[in-house]
Each structure stands twice: as structure tokens, then as C-alpha cells.
Image 1 (cartoon, rainbow, N blue to C red):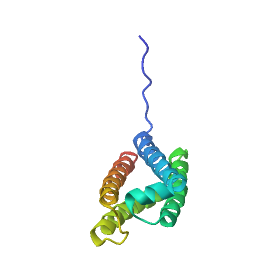
Image 2: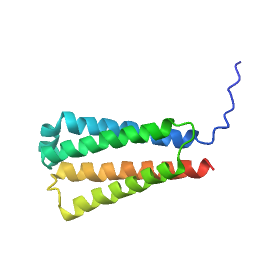
Image 3: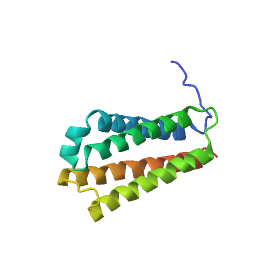
Image 4: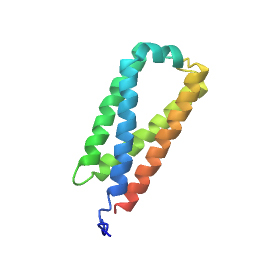
Length: 133
């Protein structure tokens, strides 16, 4: 029987939460960039807006990935990611409630679902930040 190594890296949970966020965000950004037309038809917003959101998400995902791979994860950087995730969550819900983006029904469901996923990432990152003390 092989013994499993014991890890004392207190940042492991935080790294995983940041890396998962980066991966999901990056894939979402790529989809918005590569398929802006069809996605716009499905969700409702203009394709140009989706391309802009896609570019932002791609850059944001890359920045979060870099943060996750640093030897010492920046607490300030992590707090910024958490704050931006909370802002994204609130903005998504506000877009649905106000009708600001002229979302289709599928688009509204997508926006709320995405908001929930991002809120979970924020909570996981906050938990990871606390565990890493």
C-alpha cells in the first residue's frame, strides 16, 4: 500500500476555487467571442455586446488563472476577484429584473444561472481565503 502525501498547503482550496473560476470564465468568454451571432439570437443581447463581454471574460479569466498559479496568492488580488464576482452576480440579476439587456426567456434563465455559479465561486474563494490564513 502506498501512503498518500500529507499536504500542508493552506492555499490548495483557494487555488482550486480560483482555477475553476478561471476555466469556466475563459470558456464562457471564448464561446461569446466565437459564437456571438448564434448566442445573441438565443439569449437576446446584441452580438457586439456579447463580443465585448467575451473579451472581458477572457481577459478576466486569464488574470484569475495567473493569480491561482502564483507561489504566494495575493490576498488583495483574491479580494478583488471576490468583489468582481459579487458585482457580476448583482449586475446579472439587475439586468434580468430591469430588462436592460432585452434578454429572451432563455437569456434571463441563463443570466440567473450564471449569476448563481459566479456567486458560488465568490463564496468558495472567500472560504479559501479564510482557510489560507
